[in-house]
Image (cartoon, rainbow over all chains, first blue to last red; front, top):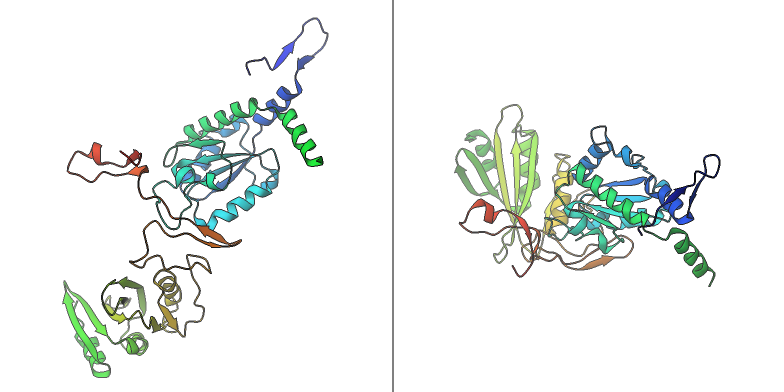
Amino acid sequence: MAEAHAAYDSKVEGNVIFTRVDAAINWMRKNSLWPMPMGLACCAIELMATGASRFDIARFGAEVMRFSPRQSDVMIVAGTVTYKMALAVKRIWDQMPEPKWCIAMGACASSGGMYRSYSVLQGIDQLLPVDVYISGCPPRPEALIEGLLKLQRKVDGEKSLGDQKRVLIESFS
Amino acid sequence: MPLPDSIATLEGKFSILKKAEFRGETTLIVRREDIAEICRVCKESLGFDYLVDISSVDNFGDEPRFELVYELSSIATNEHLRLKLSVSEDEPSVATVSGIWPTANWHEREIYDMMGIGFTGHPDLRRILMWEGYPYFPLRKDFPLGGKPSEVPEVAFTKAAPLEGGPFVTRPSTSTVKDREPRARRMEE
């Protein structure tokens, strides 16, 4: 989708821009991705660092860590998901309203990491649809920010209104 | 350090199966039936007011199969005493010492959870790490490292983990650190 998001016509008086509804919705969504911080292990420390002033995830509109799933847009699974915790993570994911996205932060959340073990889920993608995987053990804050930017690009390419209509029509049938 | 007085007291009251001294550490092997009474004497008469740990060993293939190790310590005199006892697989049950040292409560729950040894008289013998209904004892030697599939509906499920390939695979050899260190490798490599 290489189309321009907005156009400005100097012949029209006042502060008027033209855009598509999809582009406007995506622009709003991608710049206010509120994270659900699912901090389960040491990746959560890097997640906190990313939220704090040095790396300042607020520059990308994702500083509002919501500890209520009902107010969040993106679940950042930061850490080792044990089987004991797995269904709780799934339940919190289910409580998040659509549209929602998921970032698997670090080796453990992506694949089980070094825990080839009876007690650790081998990747959160066995339970939730993951949009962005971030490598690292733990990943540096820059890597998380890069993952967030990747997710923003993905959100930007979605057909937000069309998909919403499709889901709505499917719900009637 | 040698503990002549304590050992003499215990030998006078109980049958001690074996004594061992190694690098200044004293170990007594005792009978399974006596453990609660021995611990009571150790705490109340001999001053071992601190139970450092209880651990369990699975000597798979031997009989008796399990071994329990009690690490006792005295805060006042800095003395250390180790008690060991054997538990057979046919009757995996030992009297609790949680009434003597409250800390034993969780130690015994962990042994029950991981090794499947019960403790009679324990006030709250539930699993402590795994969930209620998990059907295996993961620290037993006949339990595979990658685990086994199981499911408790609405609570948790498990699957067997792959043990080859992945993001942290080491290559044991005599080559350089660069070749041995953990790296992401595929199974066939």
